[in-house]
Amino acid sequence: MTTDRWHADVIRRIKALATSTSASAVVGQATGHDMWGLRCGSQDAARRVLITGGVHGDEPAGVEAVLQFLEHSVADYVRHFHFVVIPCVNPSGYEANTRENGSGQDINRSMSNNGVIESMSLRQVIADQPFDLFFDLHEDYEATGFYMYEAERERRLLGEQIVDAVRQIGSIDSDDNTDPGLDMPVSEGLFEINPAWRTSGWSVYAYFESATHGVLTETPSTAWPLQTRVDAHLLALRLVLDHYTGTRTVPLT
Ligand SMILES: [Zn+2]
Image (tube, rainbow, N blue to C red):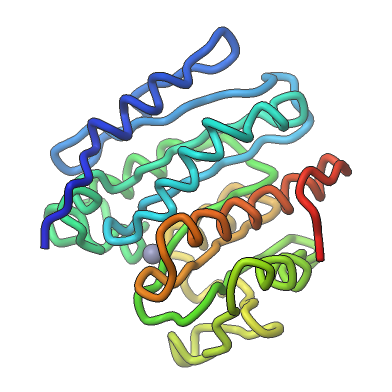
């Protein structure tokens, strides 16, 4: 299945965000494409945040949510954080609407595989660069609602609060059996990031290698319209950032 999605449009939107305090750049290589990112916020900020979207090419709400966050909301946070943001990790999959990259490889199962160019680029991005927060945006075509994964070094999880807030937007997926034996349910719609995925899953790898706090959000790509899914990702992201700034920019129920 092909789409009318083009990585060139993603790059154009990233480049349009560059200002005196933010810089867009090629951060690595991807199958048949450059991997683009944006750095923004204060270099002296107390906290460093890494945000990635589009690891799976058939999960467009993640890409769109990251771009909309940069276009409309990041200004609320640049005083508090230094951001490294990669809206579309898998451009070839994004254009072809495939989970895998253009070489048929699942980036999210390949972090220890030197033959996967996107995984190598991501490893380079986090090498020797600790992050306080890592946020990765995904979708699930089988899900009926929102759910998320989270891990934090002191196990101070925000997920129950986030899941409760997302109920304003849509239902929560209560299926706790998407990956039998690997998902670790905490409460409805919240799973702990499982170390068993450490050498394969990008967000698990990034959390264990370089981040104090990791969050992975999942929206139902076939059950909800695109903007509803984007809104759920954005709400979750902003609630996590608000937790660190101590300033509530979005209402809670
Ligand atoms: Zn995914």
